[in-house]
Image: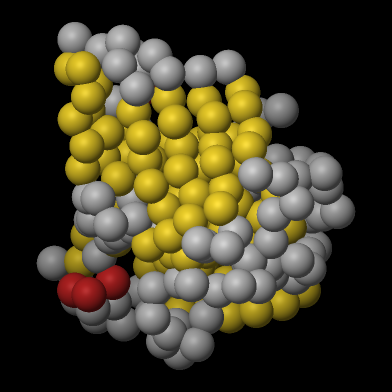
Length: 115
Length: 113
């Protein structure tokens, strides 16, 4: 169990640029989630995949955000035309469904700063 | 509309004493509840959970209590240790495997030596 890996750990970009983050879940996990966390708030749900299928996307999520999980393994989250309000910690989590508990395993996150 | 609430942003406790972190929820369809712990610059890590069919679950120094009628749960840490200083998130989800996990805003716990 190598854990959930996220890359990069930190990203600084200028407003209007596109950014892409990668998440490698625990290898046997079929469920993959993206969350966003800002200071003083809990993780906010963005989207999740069951294998390669994207099952739900938050209605709060702008069309500038897109996520993929092409082969049911790693996932990417792309933000187009970044805005300062996109600055946050982007967290990836994975789990195995069905399971005896609903435990999510989180990566260390990607900290995005939009200047 | 915040479905999971943690009304205390911070809590300070003396080492060796009990820490009690509270959580309230609004959605009666929530069926499973979890607590996560987060250190700075790390992702949240799972701590303990409880199903709605139980009112208590214990794991070492950590105990979670659930009061469904009041839509309230609490995490007790006894005895508190300085290494417990972290942000604690309460989370909840519905009955089906398609339900996502919803997190509260967190409570920052400081355990003073």
